[in-house]
Amino acid sequence: MPKNQQYKLIIVGAGPAGMTASIYASRYKIPHLIIGSVIGGAAVEAHLVENWPGEKQIKGADLMQKFWEHAKSYNPAYWPEEAIKMDKADDGFTILTDAGNTAAAPALIFAGGTQYKRLSIPGEKELLGRGVSYCATCDGGFFKGKIVAVIGGANSAVMAAAELAQHASQIYLIHRSELKAEPIWIDRLKANKKIVFIPETNIIKIIGKKRVEKVELDKPYQGKTEIPLDGVFVEIGVAPLVELVKNINVVLDANGSIKISEKSETNIPGIFAAGDATSGSGGFRQIITAASEGAIAARGVFEHLKERGLI
Ligand SMILES: Cc1cc2nc3c(=O)[nH]c(=O)nc-3n(C[C@H](O)[C@H](O)[C@H](O)COP(=O)(O)OP(=O)(O)OC[C@H]3O[C@@H](n4cnc5c(N)ncnc54)[C@H](O)[C@@H]3O)c2cc1C
Image (tube, rainbow, N blue to C red; front, side):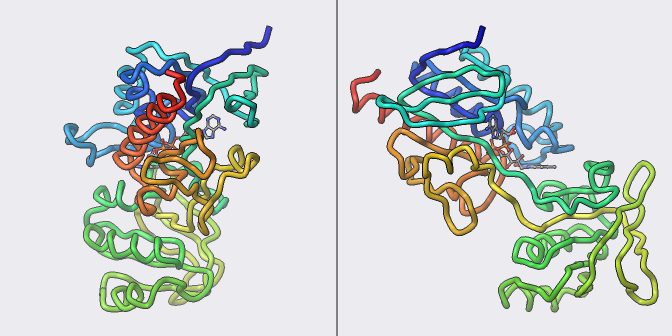
């Protein structure tokens, strides 16, 4: 029998933003439901997290388990499901899940995160976390003295190459066309002797048994189509997972991220958003920024409900 429940708040996404929003909502005594099938979101993919204050080094999955234990200690309702439809109702919003359950609430926090754009080539999925990464800030430190490739040509790729140059001994920046990064970044790139730019070239395969060992190119570089290396950073952009909110005309910015106010509210009163899916932290997508936005969104919801006499 499908569930049909009413709450004061629904949080979509159980990553760092969603779980932090839940902790704060619990402390504001807002009865709420969390919907999300992956506890911990993208952060469970982090091999080691070394930038969460108070934890010098911790596996992403272990840190997320701590978040979850904390959120769960307040007994929020939790559905391990996917929200597949969002609609406006007279007195708020309704969500339909892939299990056929529906929930309604006068306020909603969308914390659906982003999806790193994938190259979709052989070896990418198989070697994720074993040399393949989508986050230079997070994983660059594991490549001290190693040779890595960054795939991409926009700002994020060039910035990742510059960041990796602090750790790696050599960085190949491989892009299918010319660089599209800001000129100032291109100047910095040219000035860095560790970074070698390989233009007009596609990477077609990532090869390795236990870890990344080499990549295959679609045309020769210095006479060879294979480059031996230790890591591949895919920096071809992220796609915010915003299909759900697009349905009710939540405004996005030019990058497809959800536009939010300083209270983490979207253009639709009652719908808040937090974490990697938003424009909130200037594109700095980290656990700490997601958690911060989750906290701000919960406070925004508290004020929203209180102003309307709903709590
Ligand atoms: C390999 C890797 C390593 C990283 N390392 C670090 C690090 O060391 N330090 C650091 O600070 N950051 C790191 N990050 C970045 C960090 O994980 C993200 O910035 C953070 O997880 C964003 O949190 P979020 O809650 O906004 O989104 P997410 O963590 O992406 O969580 C959102 C969740 O919502 C779910 N969702 C989306 N749509 C729906 C829907 N319709 N219904 C239900 N659920 C939905 C998603 O599936 C996802 O599980 C790393 C990321 C990766 C991929």
